[in-house]
Image 1 (tube, rainbow, N blue to C red):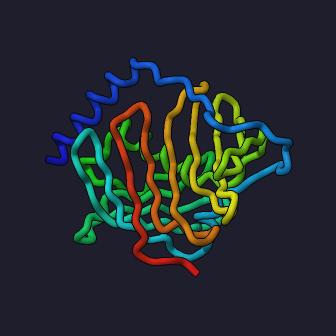
Image 2: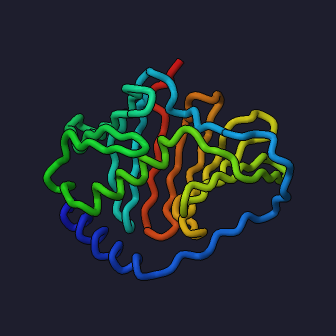
Image 3: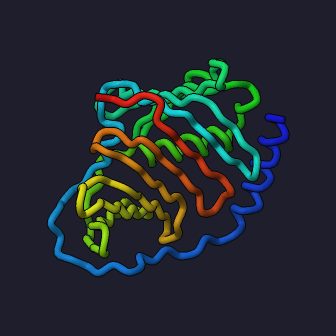
Length: 211
């Protein structure tokens, strides 16, 4: 089953790489004067373990397990995923510019799979964003951060000031939509990663909460 899933993922990924993504345009928002020079995603800034139930849907196939994320330095996190029975599937250390693979299950040891996870978690764990432009809509203050060919739209709730969404684009084409449900700035109870150019969705649900 796992080999079938990987083959489906690899072949479908190669096909979709040839299909252009729709250009992203921020809708129903108006520009405002820049009040912030930098904004942050603080959801993985605590030194405590972040433990989530992980559900991945890959081209109609489901994979589930336990995901543990731990901050091991100011710029580096360790990410470990195990099966529901506790068997280790993958273990790596990651920062914005570095990636160290400590262990991967043989069935998952494919370059495309590793690169996919590396990219997803580098974007999810990215903390600081310089602000290029600011916008607002009825519910959120929105900050645009430009980094080379990448653009990040960060949505902060006007009432709670909590980060509830990041839209990641590259060459102005939407790549990943991150959504967060949180009660405080340092921990999100649920996280959803939805790819726009691949049929892949990752959902994380709180198991333990950091203090």
